[in-house]
Length: 521
Image: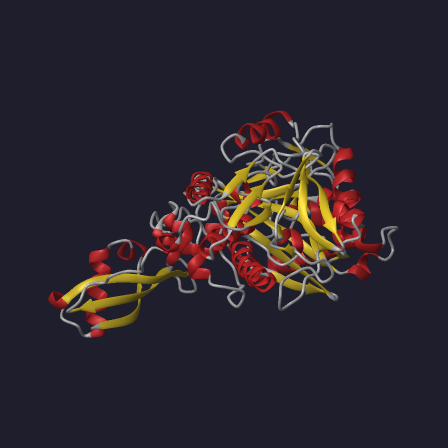
């Protein structure tokens, strides 16, 4: 017999499976001695009361043992001699598409412009320590994509887009903790993800797939309006029945390559703003009413949103116990992002705070056509860089000074290793973005008492929230609307936002490719 119950416990009790079993047995009226297994199905923090509680959904097994789910990797067989599908990009969309293709009996052949996940670390050190940006290997480009070294969070609201459990379970089968299957806001950590990503690659290779690094797609092979292959590093031609394009939200050269081949792309709304960094202890005190927080509680987070006129202002990619990192993909630009390690033990909390931009907002600027949003994004990043000293030091203000439009005489401590430069961001950001951010932060201060503080840094620029370009595809076939054989996928195509939604989109596209190939055969 199995019975599921909801229980609330103190953080300390929730960390003790003996206490969990006892409380669950009591509520379910099952004698404790008859409980064979006690499995936590879901875990979340309820911080609404004066003392935070942990809410658990627990399954009790009486008279039977919990058998668990069969391993997904047991479904895979060797595909080394099967029909090939080219995948451009080794991020979550590309790698999860590859796993799905193998399950479907097709051979994935992956090309990534960047380096493998371990070698990539040297280039991250160069940008952190010396301000040197490698345009092919950085926080956005390389094996694992942008999420590996600059995020690590697995939360998504895209529950209708695919099988979240399958994506999470594949992470677990490649080395992630099983906690991600039960936590309301699952997180692996950017110190753990590189090993997991490398394990996924080994699975792909073990079952006959291919993965090639330092392999930039510099051309497309077109035949009668059909995409039949790619050109690598200006010399190698590789043909396949179809091409999955999963290059991430910052591969600007790919968008230009598509346009040069008369493959339709279109400008897309996106969001742009700043990254706000508070002391983590302050956020804990606000959210939990505790400082220091209970040792059994995780670093607290927040999610804030409001309307300023007809545009949304919202927090994005919140990193409790995290770090602000330089995420530029080319020299001459300043881009910041956030990341968290698995323990989330940094003294700082940071979050993107951005304004939703529509194409109408850009009509006053000189940018038009499919590159309208991208050109605007790029112009802001370059303007912010030009203010500085030629390094990756980022312009910043205390939040109170940002609101009042004055240069900060000094800046609070920061996790941003390249360092901060005191600046008046009102002069660097487009006026309408600054004004909406200013009003939005004041509103956030009303919603979350203590958020508005001189202890917080406002750092420019958070500009890679999503792709500013969409590669349009058919809703049913997921193939490009005009180009047979091309399957746009993930964040770079404009159809995902985050590790899990990108992974699920990769799985969906792989299934669509399988249907396409079967019909062609």
